[in-house]
Image 1 (cartoon, rainbow, N blue to C red):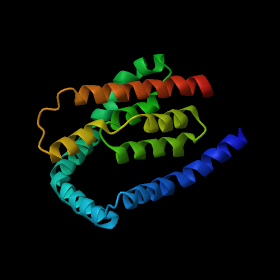
Image 2 (tube, rainbow, N blue to C red):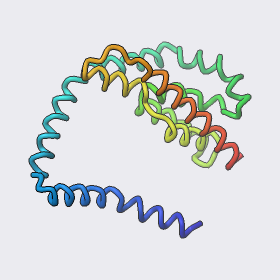
Image 3 (cartoon, rainbow, N blue to C red):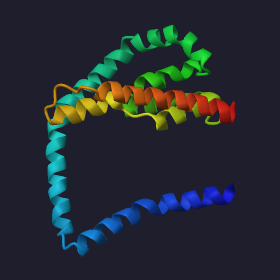
Image 4 (cartoon, one colour):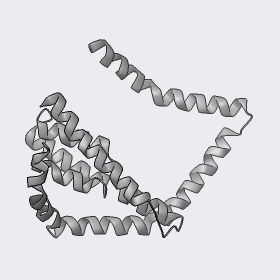
Length: 180
């Protein structure tokens, strides 16, 4: 197992530099002006960033209001009997609720849980796996759909939230299976 962990560590250290090198190499082989294309992409990225600022501010204000109003605490206390049935500690519910809304907000909650209960505790492990198994679905949809002017998201929101739910349930199941 130590050899596998060492191999994975080496692969993760080299993965991004190798990918970047291969992309530049392929671009050069195809006679693409790699630097100019990179700069054009950076300019376009900056323009998109400026467009999404209003959506970013709106979602961050909504998240702040949700937490400050006590709605998260209320919802956590209401849903905790159900989550206990599936082996999900009530303390991890705020991570599950915040993750679709905010990466930094859910990271703060998960960090707080790990600092309080320990990284090797079931709460810390479930919070960590939840964080890695889900995405900031509503945040992403608000930013990216808003930046290109899409008003009707159709199936994107339900599909993303179902994916998040699957990630949350898998996190609880596998943490209980492996560490429980």
